[in-house]
Length: 193
Ligand SMILES: Cc1cn([C@H]2C[C@H](O)[C@@H](COP(=O)(O)OP(=O)(O)OP(=O)(O)O)O2)c(=O)[nH]c1=O
Image (cartoon, rainbow, N blue to C red; front, side):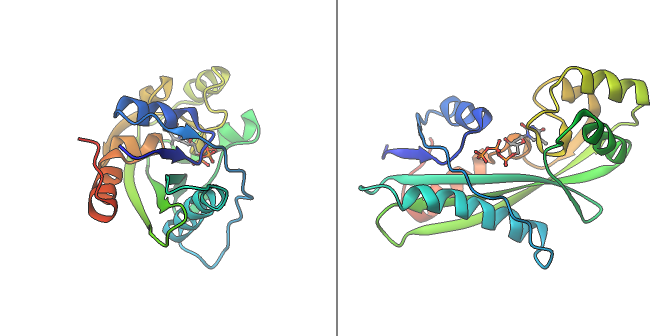
């Protein structure tokens, strides 16, 4: 397989790629995550994933495949980022309690030093069970909410909060693996299997 560069500091994304037999070179891509009010959530996630991948691709000398991704949580047209405090985490989980929300991941794949690039997104609906204030407080106290869009991690103790999902599980964790394989196959003649 060609050299794959993951333009991400997210340990989840690295672990996911490793699980699917890709050993990525990690290059963190620090961008300012600006959110423009005129864009849809899908457009925002795709634009941010592209910015992350493009920043790294521009610094490379060969024809590496660069992957960038951005995950956002959308509840009733409101974008929920990463909570900056336990209080904000608590407010987010109260909003999500008993309701459905969307997790959207933008994914950008760029071949460095070529004009080959593709940008797409994946959407998963997540239904939360009804949460008591005590349950929310107990979850926030675990600290797991930190660094997670929407303030929870489905792959961890946050799994207790989720009743069901509609769509790709890996998308919620930050990288829709089936779509990555589909895009690699279709546009780069590569595949995970
Ligand atoms: C909803 C949810 C989000 N998350 C995580 C996935 C993403 O890593 C994070 C959203 O932040 P992102 O901005 O997508 O990614 P990141 O800051 O972790 O890494 P980088 O920008 O360097 O690529 O939330 C989970 O791990 N589990 C979940 O259930």
